[in-house]
Image (tube, rainbow, N blue to C red; front, side, top):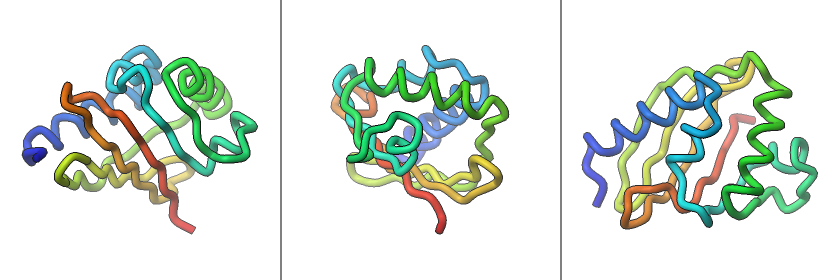
Length: 119
């Protein structure tokens, strides 16, 4: 079970890495074979399924996204702790409400991530 302080620490590290646009710091939070799902993957990466597997594929996608959106900034709103996951609620691109559900492995790394955006 993820303790509230662990969830908060992960949320703080995740937001900081994204807000500095430090791709190495972002990827360091994830396992090598993690799965990422996002509606933006189809647009930015050209992957119609909206899902990518592994640091190489996701890293390339995030590199393109950070280039495409140089002013990208996340404003943290809430951190929610689950059994083996953390949900981060934040304002993202253009102030749009977003949430990321991050499933955590036994080593404390993110093994799966699923992004959700307000409609």
